[in-house]
Image (cartoon, rainbow, N blue to C red; front, side, top):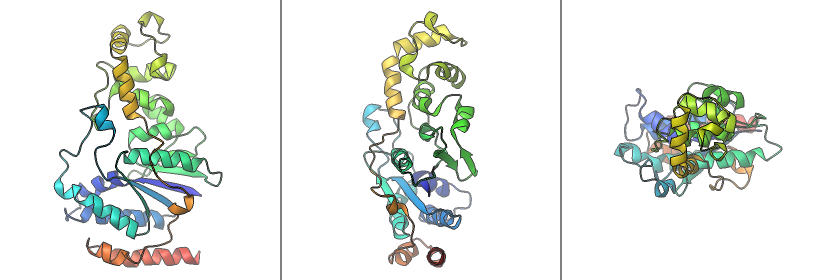
Length: 291
């Protein structure tokens, strides 16, 4: 059994800003449903889709500059409930997040699913660097960029960031994450951060005094002073960057099995101009029932 966990928010943004989208009011939501049916057509059997029903989360209370819905086009924002309704009607398991974020849901679901001995592999379908922290050395949890058709395993995370998956929250705490709205620490770039964390792995293991460092990094004296002065801030940023396993997802893996669209699908997708997807969903259902 392979589990596919999809970042519905990322997919919605991707389709909305696609050069081929000529329907700003419904095109993105319709495109995501089409994409999920394609996932089934490609062989997926168990699919969970996480969305940010509310853009803000508990992280906004931790850091005032954390990302909000500001700047999101209103016609895109209006499609969040539409895509959740349409995907549920199409027969998919959807997790709309309110207190948490879609990233939390995917990470929590991945770790939970990987505990089941019947699961061969969990594919977290998003290019988001936050989710790299969930990738495991045994290959049971990987990231998959569907747009580039690129699988990112444990070695792939190390090659890309220079640190182990477990160090990704520490890495983001130091270098910052502009997409999420926290700046990291001044002077701590990707190369220096990777060099230090490749040795120490976590923030609390890095000595305050540069004379105690066991790794040579350019500008280490200034980096050490900056970290010593802003260690609590770095720990806050790490908390922000850490996936929360308590996000609500599934109780049983059977909830993720796609068995076909619901009776409401034709009317629901029809309102989005996707009548052509009804026949496709029905054909996929028939193929599954015959297999």
